[in-house]
Amino acid sequence: MIWTGILILFCLIGLFAYYRQLRYGLVVTHMGDYASWGIYISNFVFFVAISLVGSLVTAIFRLGNIHWSTPLTRIAEIIAVSAILFASFIIVVDMGRPERLVNLFIYGRIQSPIMWDVIVISTYLVISLLLLYLPLLPDLKILNDQKEKGRGWWSRIYVLFGGFWKSNARQERINQKAVLILSILIIPVAFCIHTVTSWLFATTYRPGWDSTNFGAYFVSGAFLVGAGAVVIAMYVFRKVYHLERYITETHFDKMGKVLVLLALIYLYFNVNEYLVPAFKMKKTEEVHLVTLFAGDFAPMFWFSLLAGLIIPAVIMLFKQGRKPLPMFILGIMVVVGAWFKRYLIVTPTLLHPFLPMEDSPERFKHYFPSWEEWAIAIGSLAGVLLIITFFVRIFPIIPIQETIAEQDATPEK
Image (cartoon, rainbow, N blue to C red; front, side, top):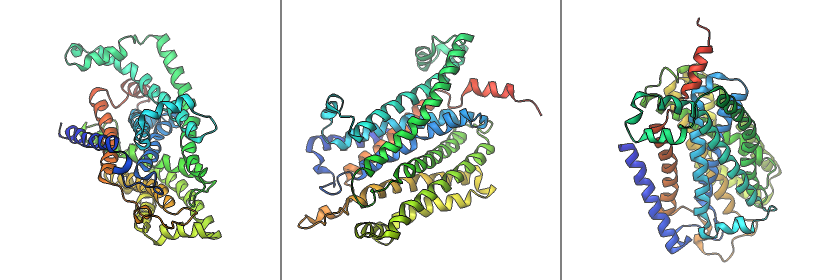
């Protein structure tokens, strides 16, 4: 209850800050003519990145016939659904005039990359919801069959969402086929959602964004931070709900190996992202790179690179580093480093336009979020955690039917 109360409090503070923004306008933020996106878009890219873990664990692992990931699929999917919901919300917050959102659907032009983002985000959300719901149906049947089903308001939720499920052969066959089709569909959509997000930056002619590497750079980073978020959730659920029998040290060991692979891939694209511009050293790129490597943003840059990428990858190369507690700490480092990385993608570039800032107010040359921006950003993160918390308290976080089926199919040693 304390945890839920804290999350609700942060959400309410965020809603109050958003009320102030709606009442007084974007003037309550510290964004301006140059830093016109700021922490809102950083949060958007961060949430979109985390959401890709649903396709990694649920789809890629499922299609690859990797059965050890079964206890993790529902964890990954609820993270994906909650993250993509608040990614959509944070975009509305950044608009300043949310009542004009409808114009995007009435007058939207397919030539605009923003319209591409709306399409892929909506598609990804629908597929993720279905991949969360369809495998849940057999578990709802088990819960509805319990003798205690008449006790508690949650039993009505089980009947509402799964009362029609009879678990007969026809339903099972249709369900399995639907999950297989969705698992195939979500992979290209997942790649599209972050590729299109990267194109929103890359098609804008700014130093630091003028890159053909951005699509692969964003996708590889998204898989890394998503896997890190799953590791954190694994540890928390394992401890709080005593799931040591289902989420074992073997799962942490295997997820550690996955994280090392993803970290190495992401490191490769980081080298591409900075080495080529540094080698050519055009004037505008030079200012941007110096700001990151040795300027005002250097502490944040080196923290995100070392603490959020290189150090976790090195530690996880060793078996002791892939134990539950070290993996939990490393997962936090990866996720925090990833958030700073998204902030660095947005802010420094906006503060270094091609045209020099001449005769501009001093406040336009710097950016640090106002308390309203921080409150909304933290409130959106609390909202993601609140959705996960409510889901876990109502529905089983470990797939019951799939786990039983796999245990029966595994030969005894």
